[in-house]
Length: 230
View 1: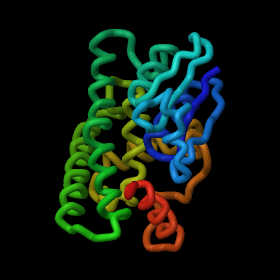
View 2 (view 1 turned 120 degrees about the horizontal axis):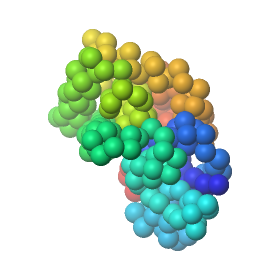
View 3 (view 1 turned 45 degrees about the vertical axis):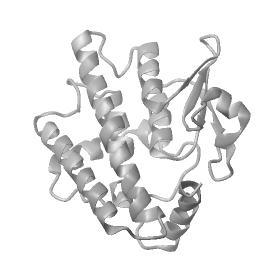
């Protein structure tokens, strides 16, 4: 049994989608970021950085692990799923997982901050992160031109990680127009029942792929702004 400490964010969904795809039994502990649960001393014992997700593997001496990418690698090695066993194949998966962690996530995250959450609209910053996000999407699109999945010939944790972020591109204000390969890949993953279930953990949010200038979007941005300003 695994305990997942999480919140409804792309990084949290990376963990829940992985657990769902692997068919692992887990329980959910909601970390209320708006309420400051991430600063609770007990949670800081699990993650000194105060971020989600965190897992505890009760079948492995209550081993606790932070950082979404590390969690995904651990679960892949634990189950033997969504990660090749040979060094070359494994490294190919990890490089595209690192691509998400070093590029897709940070660029989209900063686009969210400046485009959605900051009370002041700093246009050069918005342009910077949206343009870089689009460039990164074009890298993915080109890579997927002759591949069904990001790494090797089968779906892997690299696909899960990148999809959990890229699917929210509209919220970041980043266009995917003309990126047919990326759209095809996104659609394949979106149709998977485990992925659909994973993005509803710990709660189902308004669909960020559809939110725009609506009251729901304003409320979501206002709540997020409170976190950014702390």
